[in-house]
Image (cartoon, rainbow, N blue to C red):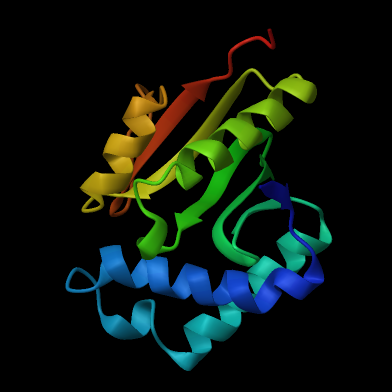
Length: 157
């Protein structure tokens, strides 16, 4: 089940975010950049703010949050800022369900294009996004150690 995240989901979302990020950042960037008390507090505040705006969807399985997606307008561009699935639920369809729900929201809002940034070493995520129709931004393909991808939102059927 995909639903709009509520304040009661914050702890589970923050924990899932930390677990997922550790899987692709570990060994590639300093641990304190993703696994320090200050970083956990910063990202928790970010999730709290996004949930407050109604910009977060979460996937629920067996009564627990197992996936999360956040999106919104950033400087006039629709951006998928986060999409994380708990590692124990990888390749189970959770990410695809979240992605479909985000696309449906964009279609309702008549969004035509979107962007995201994906860590350049996170080949698993890159393959997921490519499978779902994302492509390298032809004009601005990099932001630091992240690739910028674009998505053309299909018309609602």
